[in-house]
Image 1 (cartoon, helix red, strand yellow):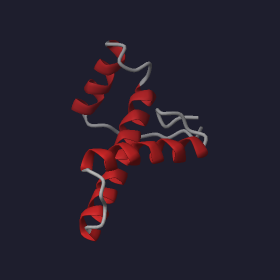
Image 2 (cartoon, one colour):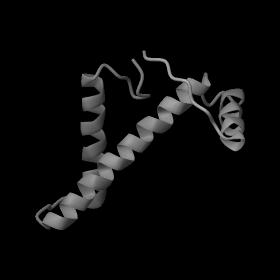
Image 3 (cartoon, helix red, strand yellow):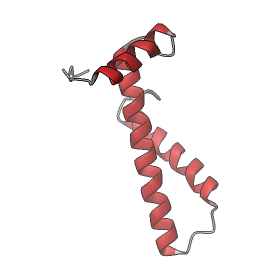
Length: 88
């Protein structure tokens, strides 16, 4: 997995540390990868909902579109060799 060096604001660093201390995540890297995965999921679902609203041809509800989009995103991430946390 590629390594990155990033700078964090003090509040964000403290939040990440707290997540690891509380055992929500095993490391800061796991937390950052999960945050990025969630942001990608939100971005994908939002774009799909906007397209559906603009086309006005979908018979699916927003919840159905959201569920279908999450499954499509999970499948595409698995195709990239990533697990549900966005890591190999």
